[in-house]
Length: 353
Figure (cartoon, rainbow, N blue to C red):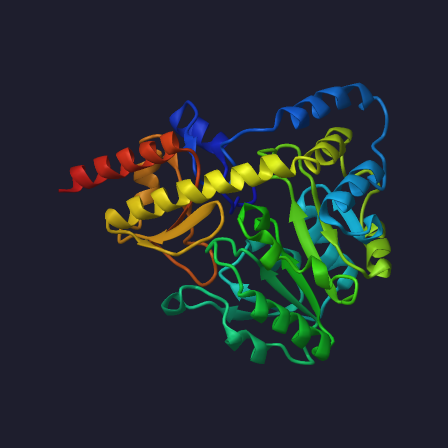
């Protein structure tokens, strides 16, 4: 069996320990599924006797209206990872530039390409700095950025992000910006590049409803680009029924839940401050993340195993390129979940005294 390299594997936990853990290893909102989204998915069960709409018309129209983007700029897939696979198949880049650390699926989908890495430095707070501009050359076919970054939670300064977009345009490179966590930012409008889409056919933005609306089991993601030819190539890059009836209904309903999303982002910001302060008070080095998770460093390379034995899963980040043993990521969830994490950490520290 292939090695699973992501968080959220509660199934292996159940086999090893029995029961269900507090899963902080996957960055899923703990505030649940909005009721209207839940009802839309239940109603969609009646349509499961039909094939899914092959071009996701209703979902694209709803998302386009919510994002103020022409629905012709949207391609919908079976989660953001599916869209990444299709982008790699359609673009077939020879040389790619990725930051490290970053989401592992970028590198996986680019098998066979010459991948160059721009390493984010801990002494710079793992921030993307102007250093990246010199790495974008005419030999670069595509640049991948994650904003906010996974696993650091850091955002790229808006002026620098636009400078990266301009440098890519000058170099003839595509720019793929993964904005899957942007809606967790209270100032999301400052950090998205949606406003550049119409005049920047080299720009591709990636989104998903998985985390914000707590529907990782449904699988729905999309990209936005003004390159209509690329949109057509994405449809040709795989099967035509890749997004289920239930997922399309979920997305169409979720697109209308902007007020609910804003409330969740505000709650996450409050809990993130509490979580960050508590981790730091326990001697852990916390990266100043801005999304619904925090990266931290511990001197204990087995901390994730000790927490798992106490019913708490965090993401061991040792397998992230650019990190190593002792780096961990934890989701920002409710106050009760944070208290449970702190109690487990305190118990481990007490046993080690």
